[in-house]
Length: 257
Ligand code: SAH
Image 1 (tube, helix red, strand yellow):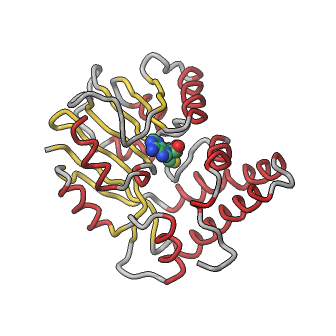
Image 2 (image 1 turned 90 degrees about the vertical axis):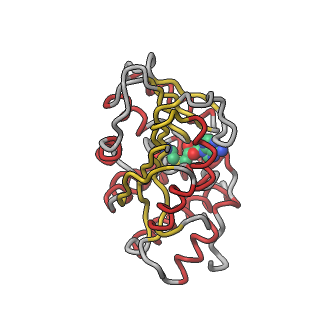
Image 3 (image 1 turned 60 degrees about the horizontal axis):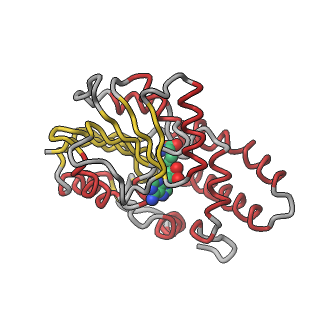
């Protein structure tokens, strides 16, 4: 990492949450991709209970709700996201089946064997992939499924610049076969894995940020921390354009044994 590039961990979490709450999605993905992942799930019914862990403002949750039976509990650590989540659910007339709650993914209050499906797009990194799969397992009914998207290396080796970026941002990033093995070791049958396509980063995640960054800078004019944060975001986007053949997100879907 060059001297002028700050680590994402150095920024004020309030600032990060405020920025991401202005976006429809807080991670790479798309409605089509959510539906593709959902197509592997066969155990849902009208009484099913789904958890969307690290749901953010609920972009993917509302897609799930419109296309899957049962009710959904969205879980996120930050009230700003959950407020927006519950407003979204209401606007879409989904409030009877979709509810957001503020909890941490490492201490969720679900009962053992309460859930039919755990969904988590771009969030499990907050406690780590294998740890998440292990700890969430008890909440699932036998035969229940987990579907997550997670930062992954596409190759065994990669340039030092991008390796260093990820070792700072999320050292848990690993290759797809290694992630599949972690899922199996945590007590699941791996059902599927597929790569989140380039357009989900560029068009669905990064493109809306161009305007969001301008607005954020206007709102925080003269605030050094805000300027540094946006510079950091722009650096991350540049790295993706430069190195996207080496890394990205992959979906991982497993079934509890
Ligand atoms: N699933 C959403 C958001 C992904 S961003 C999407 O794909 O758009 C990661 C999310 O994890 C953020 O909403 C963040 O607030 C949440 N998060 C971070 N730490 C968390 C924790 N300990 N428990 C629950 N959620 C957490």
